[in-house]
Image 1 (tube, one colour):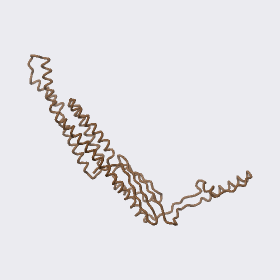
Image 2 (cartoon, helix red, strand yellow):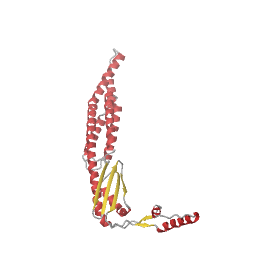
Image 3 (cartoon, one colour):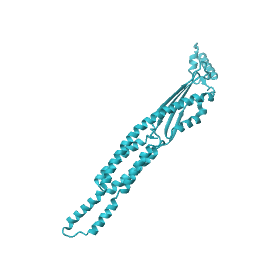
Image 4 (tube, helix red, strand yellow):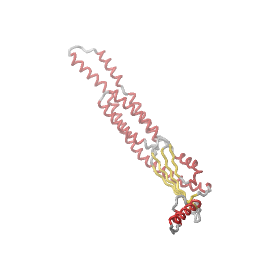
Length: 293
């Protein structure tokens, strides 16, 4: 089954005390790269979160955003006044009044605007109590992501099949044309010799040798057989329930190599044209495989 590396998923969970929101975005990447953004309160669960994600996704850049909110009515958010800093500001303000003869009063809202006047000290959370809710939201997001990856993968698979059928058609034309190249060379060579020698009798043995050498040099049977084998492998990999992107990319490289060899060995315009068409379709396949897990 083909799965796209580009997708988005979201999961939400809440109870009477807490609410979790998990958003996951996956992007193309040659390797598995998990990027997490989450509150400090969940820091101790990082390895477990990574493990859950890694068990569901084989390849790609996975960006995960986790939001956590305490929703109980009397929740303590660990906010404290930075009293030493505030006292210093008050002292400076009074000194300013004395030096300049002012009679300004300092207002509380001014002090609250001072940087670091309010300190946040994270409240220690009961991780055992947090874990079930977080896992539910995370798995929901992963399920949503997986669904989109499969849908996108189905569209990619449809395009793959279209390209593979086109390549197979061009390859069939090359295979049909290949045997005719030698016969046409024999005829052209004989005609050329006749033109040059006129009434001199042709040495059939020498002609046969030249044709044999040409046939050996332009024989592309092996390349055709290997390309057909690669096409079959490509289709077989598409049905696997596994990460196949790298394998498909390797097969495309191999097919490109075989087609280049065909074009250079055959010395035939028709085969060259079909080879160019195959390479064009292979490039489109290669672009698509960059998005396959």
